[in-house]
Length: 260
Ligand SMILES: C[S@@+](CC[C@H](N)C(=O)[O-])C[C@H]1O[C@@H](n2cnc3c(N)ncnc32)[C@H](O)[C@@H]1O
Image (tube, rainbow, N blue to C red; front, side, top):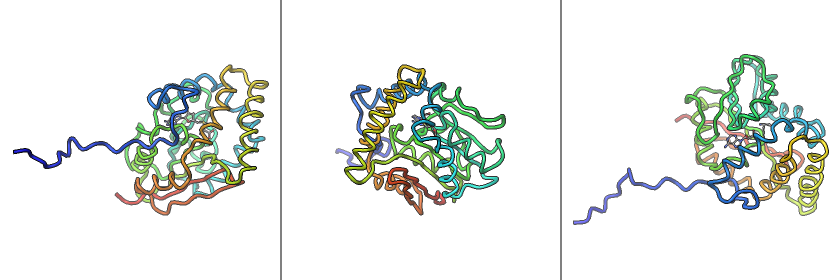
């Protein structure tokens, strides 16, 4: 007789939820995305801070600090900064918490981490948001600055964020979103696809920086809508999920890790 009882060991894993479909102008498929992203950040890392400064007219540190403060980051909190890169968000987190030993940064790109200027005491780890190299329930606050578009699975990432945070801890993801109106979309596209790659060509020292800047816009344009990001946060166990928007494009997603 055939046994029709479902075998839990054989139950299929939920389908991954990538933030955007593969961008095949840059890499062949979802499988190749991770390697491509790591290489492009490794190769362009020495230029990242300079081009980011030009692109944001020098407002990056101020904006990051304001956003972290709005999300409730304050003195004495233990922080995990994911996709820390050259440390631009981590530096601002440090200003607010006041103690380097409370801060941990994680990034898959050794090149980006090598260009970070974080003080002694900060823990820096190579790793990906999908599988964080940290123990569970060990942080009060988890930040991610402009890296969510580069992960491969939103469901896995938010599950990991929830695992890393203590119950009641706060997640704060900063990301650029496609603006609502057509004119605003056209203007931002011209800026990101033409002006910024030109700045990267003129002021950058690495060959691939203009490509990375074009890729930025393509990921913004292709990214799932904010409602889907928030739904993934709720599905992973975050409550009080909110999205604050600045200038129509800077999304700040926050949520609280519910008790397990
Ligand atoms: C645009 S940079 C942002 C760096 C920094 N957080 C900031 O605020 O400027 C994106 C970073 O995300 C990292 N990244 C790419 N894929 C990632 C992943 N799967 N998990 C975590 N970080 C990732 C890249 O290596 C890169 O350092």
